[in-house]
Amino acid sequence: MESLSRAQARRVALAAQGFLDTPHAQPTLRTLDRAVGRTGVLQIDSVNVLQRAQFMPLYARMGPYDTDLLRRAAEERPRRLVEYWAHEAAYMPVDLWPFMQHRMARAHERAWGGPRSIARERPDLVRDVLADVRERGARTARQIDADLTGGAARTKDHWGWNWSEVKKALEFLFYAGDLTVAGRNGSFERLYDVPDRVLPRVVLETPTPTAAEQHRELVRRAAVSHGVGTEQCLRDYYRMGVAEARAAIAELVEAGELLPVTVEGWGRPAYLHREARLPRRVAARTLLSPFDPVVWERARAEALFDFRYRIEIYVPEARRVHGYYVLPFLLGDRPVARVDLKADRATGTLLVPGAFAEPAAPDATAAELATELRRLAGWLGLERIVVGERGDLAPALAAVLASGVH
Image 1 (spheres, rainbow, N blue to C red):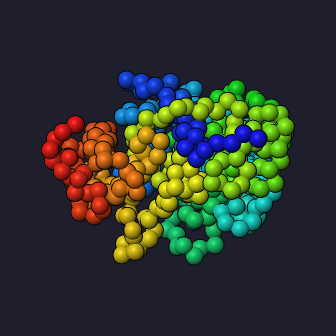
Image 2 (image 1 turned 120 degrees about the vertical axis):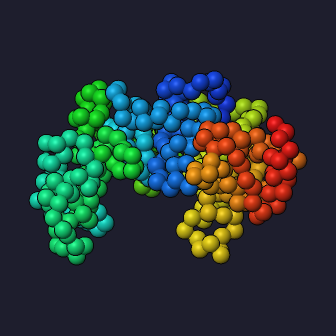
Image 3 (image 1 turned 90 degrees about the horizontal axis):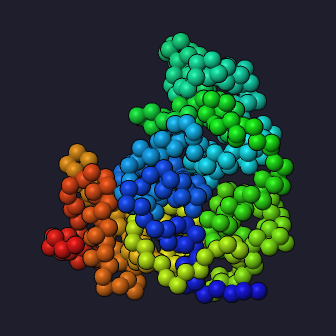
C-alpha cells in the first residue's frame, strides 16, 4: 500500500482540481470545458453579495473571464451543461445525465416528505404542470402558476393551485428528470422545460446504464476530481449513499482504477485515482468560493490543509468570527488567509470588512492578496477597494493597497 504525506495529498488534490492548468490569455468555452472537467460540477447558489457561487470556481481556475460563457454553455446549443441535483443544485456536464437516472427514479419510488410528497397528494397537479410546460415551452414557476390559476388571487393556506403547490410539483418533476432547466431569466428564476428540448440528442438516446454502472461512474468522477480521497470524500462529491458508494469503490479498486493509500494524519483509508498527478509544487494564487469543491466538504479541507472553515451567513452578526461572506485565499498549495468580501455595485467598490492571516502565513501574504483583490475587482467591474479594520491582516493589506505597489 502506497503512502502520501499531507503535503503530497494537498498537491494531488489541487492538481486534480485544475490548479496546474496553463492559463488561457482569453478564456473561451474550451477553457470552461477544461475547468468543469476538473471540478465535475458547479454548485449553484443565489447569494450575490460578491458573485454568485457558480461563477467563482471558474474564476479561481480560469482567471477573469466573460461570465456569459457559463450562460452559453448551459443555454445555447449544443449545450455543455445542465442543471440537476448532482451535488446540491448544480450545473453538471450533459453526459452525466444518464448516470443520474437512479436518482431520478427515486423521486417516484420515495414520493414522501418535502416537495416530493406532492406526487402522492396531488398527482393531478403534477400532470397539469408537466402538460403546461410541454405545451408552452420554457417557463418560470410564476408563469406556470399563472397559466394554471388564471392569475386569480390566492392565499397560502389554500388547499391547491397556489404558488407553493405548483412549485412543489415543479421541484418533484425536476428531481424526477421529467423537467429540466432551459436557462435562467434576469431575476435568476429557472426556466423549466422538458429534456427533449434541452438536452442533446446523443444524451437522450444513450441507453440507461445499470444502477451499479451509474454508481461506479459517479465514484470514478469524484475520484478524478479529488485525486485522492477517503470513502467519505468520494461519497459526498455526488451525494451518494453509503452502500452504493462502498460497493463502487470496491469494484474500482479491484479494477485497478483506485489505488488504496494511506495519507499522513488522516486516520482512515484513502484512495488515489490511478491517473492522478503528484506535482512537485503548486503555485496557485486565487480566492475560493465557500462552495468551491476544494473546501465544500469541510472535514476534507481540515484534513488536507489544517484549515477549519465555516460559512457564517446564517450566524447572527454578533456571533460571527470572520464575517458574512468569507473566502479562503489560496496561495501556493494551501489557504494562507481568509477575507470577508462584498461588492458594493452602486459605488463601484470592493469592500473588505475583514482580513485574517492563517498561522504560518508567509510574509508576502498581504502583497499577494492585494494583487488578487485588484484582479477580482477588475473582473467584477469595481473601481475601488476599501479595507475595513477587522482582522490581523487588515492593516498590512490596506497599506499595500494604498501604496499602489503591484
